Length: 349
Image (cartoon, rainbow, N blue to C red; front, side, top):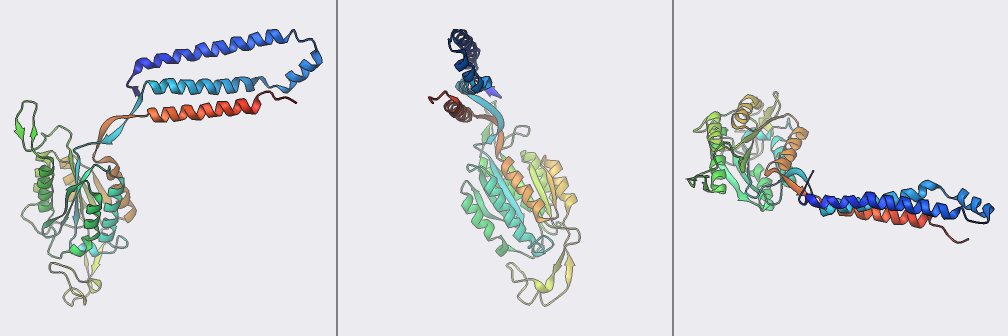
């Protein structure tokens, strides 16, 4: 904990002064009590009084004053605070294998729910974009602080399912370009204008990439896309969705866009095809760019990962003032001291 006005902590010196004054007054009152002429009445009164009661109310009152003194110093705690320029690009695989049901109720439904959790935990001023990719990358929602717009795009991901391959490298390149456009040009300390923040400074852009399969299409290989993100200083947080034994039941596939199967199955074929994820490639992407990898083999792991990323990304280390909390604590202690005084104060018979 630190303080914006540390000199105000000197007001705490009044606490021992008041404590000493209260102790002196109690001793002085005890001296006068000895002069009471009716010792039987005095003994009865003393017998009904518990000495610690007098001190407890006074102690609570002094604690309240101490909390007020601390509040005047404007205490601050170190925590992650929202960054004004932060942008997160959510990149979600919508290839046909996302209809597999090894992640309940399905991979694509679990991914949609995870994106929703991310938005719920993200700072309101965080700019979020959504890219859907299969054989090619499509910007479903541009970078915006309107999280409702991103949620609408997320709700329609299942309508974008595409059976024409998985282009992880191209999706990463599209996300990097979108992130650079969102931040805009930046001036260095020497006055030079660059397209993006130099690597080594804290990046205002992060990419969260979810994929459930191997690269099968695209101009760029996954590590080529990762190299572009690394050059731009953008960390990529990757999520491998699915289980090693995941399969796609062709006979149960519904109609999809961009070459998807019809109501009667995939071109009339039935049976299953294996659709395992590619955790090795996604782990390498995260390690190369300075992100973090998650192997999500169930919906809970996926949800926890996105909720955690929503709470962390778009924030930077900073100070948060807790003056109001200190004042509230002081008010509670004052009420407690007043209640104890009223409860135990002498009453007429």
